[in-house]
Amino acid sequence: MESIELCERLKPQLQSARTILFFAPMPGEIDLWPLLEESVPAGKIVALPWFDPATQTYLARRVENPAGEIVTGKFGVREPASKLRGNSAGENLIWFSCRELRLI
Image 1 (cartoon, helix red, strand yellow):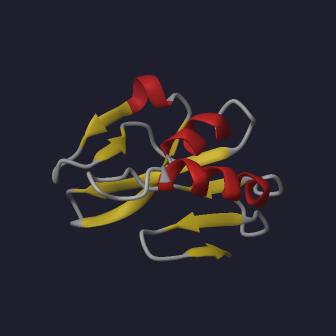
Image 2 (cartoon, one colour; image 1 turned 90 degrees about the horizontal axis):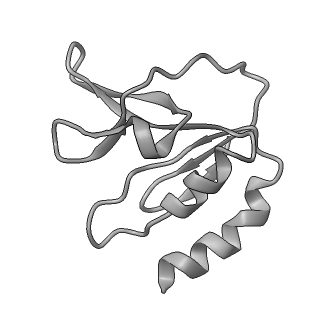
């Protein structure tokens, strides 16, 4: 129930965002996945963290088809299989983490 309520509270915040970096929740974490699924058809640029084995770091990768592009990553976390195409510095980016919400 907490996830559903948070998704409803965040919807107005997403109206002005053009690019949104979500996270794929692990069991027990807040689940914002419904917002990700609504944001893609609404024309938003949506991204998820993707583990880069070459650098052993996480990078943002674009998600254009959540139902068809998501794979299980190295640590059992859902991540995109498609590459994030660049976004301009002038775009609003809303970034979600387990602990905070920031508008960058």
